[in-house]
Amino acid sequence: MSRWVLVNFLVVPLVAYVAIKAFLGTRASEVPYSTLDVKEYDYIVVGAGSAGCVLANRLSENPNVTVLLVEAGGPDQKKEIHVPAAFGALLHSDVDWGYRTVLQKEACMLTEGTCAWPRGKVLGGSSSINAMMYTRGNKADYDEWERMGAKGWSYDEVLPYFKKSEDYRSDGEESYHGKGGPLNVEKASFVTPISKAFVAAAKERGYPEVDYNGKSQLGFSLTQLTVKDGKRHSTATAFLHPVRERHNLYVVTGKTAKKLAFRGSNEVSGVYVVDTERHNTDEEELIRARKEVILSAGAIESPHILMVSGIGPTEHLNAFGIPVRADLPVGKNLQDHLMVLLPFELKGTAVGSGPGVSEELMGSFSSLLSYLLFNSGPLTTSVGEAHGFALSGLEPQHQGPDLQFILMPAGVDLNFLKLFNAKPAIPKVLWGNNILQSQNAGFTIVPVLLHPLSAGHIELSKAGSVFDMPVIDPNYLEDDRDMEVLLRGIRIALNIANSSAFDQWTVRCLAENANGPYQYNTDQFWQWYIRHASETLYHPVGTCKMGALDDSSTVVDSRLRVKGVKNLRVVDASVMPKVMSGNTNAPTIMIAEKAADMIKKDCILSCRYCRFYC
Image (cartoon, rainbow, N blue to C red; front, top):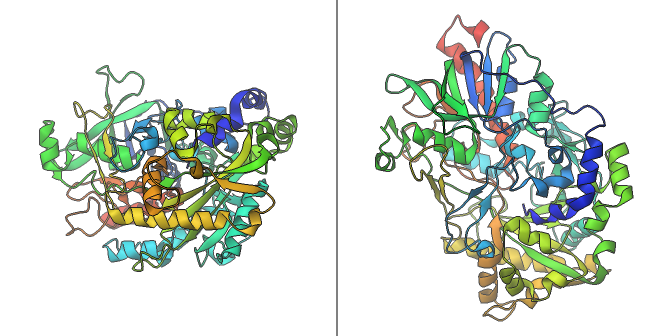
């Protein structure tokens, strides 16, 4: 998702707001966390993100099993985490790892060829800093995973785990949703008029209004969000904090997993950890696992930890002098969703009185009072209030959508540049010399490439330490067919914006102001535009690919065990064989739910008398 909209929401009023809010009510983030007084546990889970918090909850359900959850970041006490509209203030902050890609030849030119890749460095991981959009993907995605060798991961087999997590509180297809699960999912209680118009416009163009997490994903809708009582419902809030009193669950923050410990050549026995803030010292601690170590550090850090521990491509590890314990394609198969920012202005409609969000709306006394007293109003909204899914017509082999469209209820302003670290010159080229002085309200439609044929990789850098930022190359738009799908996406977005549902405003695409080398609205123009206005949607997956044991492209088997290594699993978005048709947070939570059951069952199978300890 774009980061610029929500900084607009904050500015001075939100600073005042959080100062007051700090004194009201009980904050779930105020929980006691352990020190590493105990040096051995049954399970060690590395990374307290979308998957790690779920695993910690489920594995510690048995009071006879001890679980340690290790998080490099701190507790989720930053006030902005819990305010949905403060999403933009979390990116590039102290709760963001601050990754960047290497120079891209075909994308990210808005930021001079490199994309920022925000990932959560805090309890809850990226579920504590994302846009809270709850999207499962398409039935065909999971059936394809199984055809690729991920046995047991078909849609019919994963649907119960989606439902297990969920407590769904809005209208929709009940048979596809869960009730009473830890994670609250609901449509936003506050929705701007421009977002409602977007759904109506899509319907006018032939796209039905659907429950996109139900039987059919094709269509448009207001967005289902991980929000509860007007606050973000991260995996830390939903899964971790409610069970913090369990005597067998230990959570430690501010500790980074430096590398894995081994017994012999290929049996993992624990993890070496160091203080995140004092990692330059030699004061590492060895924490041992009696049963398993589970990496849930995400699609960037899980492969990073594996490689510094000697699990990865032999040639690459040899270049860093790292002894090879398992020759596996760790870091390969990197996939991500690429989005294109397509802003529109409402000519003659002032920003402060427009149908979307604005600094004036978010900072008004009524908005602040509504949130402080009732947890309602504009501060409860997400940057993506509405979105939908469609077919480009170019990918007949896939039964689900290959395009997603997200409606952001705001246009371009100075904060856009700050959030993308873009210099003013490029936005002026894309949207006109006067774009930063415009007083018109606006909105932005974001076409998203759901099934990229271009794939990249993650590699070690510098000295091969876990504290050196890895080399991240998503290889955006390397395959020309990806550009063709996005071209179709632009055309669909323009068609929706030109519908009568927007007739009460004078809508104009800001790309008409472009100072580019090609005539507006030609294919050449839009190819040039896509290269310049494209950014990540923050959905990296695939770098520890799951699949069959005899498949040389896989890192983990269908039970998420690292091939050729004992007592080690990877459970996070990195195991996805292929990125799904939608946002990745909900599928990552599902993966952890299913993995927890697998771990318990495998424990029982390994020892017929050990059920009591599994």
